[in-house]
Length: 188
Image 1 (cartoon, rainbow, N blue to C red):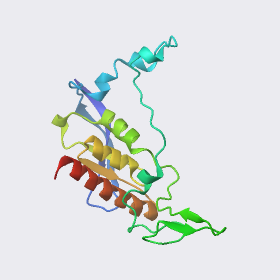
Image 2 (cartoon, rainbow, N blue to C red; image 1 turned 90 degrees about the vertical axis):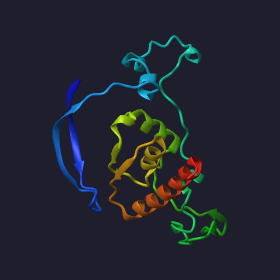
Image 3 (cartoon, rainbow, N blue to C red; image 1 turned 30 degrees about the vertical axis):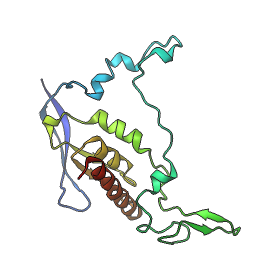
Image 4 (cartoon, rainbow, N blue to C red; image 1 turned 180 degrees about the horizontal axis):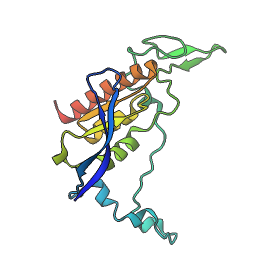
């Protein structure tokens, strides 16, 4: 089956990831393979189920994940990114204006997403291995929660764009940390 999709080409040789061209291009549509997360969700009608108040018996096509924990937000930042409040690079706590101990905060982004949720969403978007290298563009990447989730889901090439220098540095440190975690899990 052949269809038309808008394709955005990105020049990865430029540091800022400038968009070179956006155009309609004829591409082949593909169908889900066995064990594809999208296929597991069922038909489109599954998004509008007729609930009979017996949700316990349904295979609901969505997942709930709580907000990102401070430990997840700060993973990999100690010794690399200074505390946003006291400026200490290796400090765990500092005194607040009342003289009380307060935990250092290195990831100052206001909306860090939970990595488990982003990994689940990135898995839904992941094309079959036949389309490798699978590439994803993340505009407004913030501190790279979406990039980490995409990497953990199996995307081979991740292009991220962020305008804030502070968030780029935090996101880079977080990405390096999670890449190391992934390498340990995969044994190499």
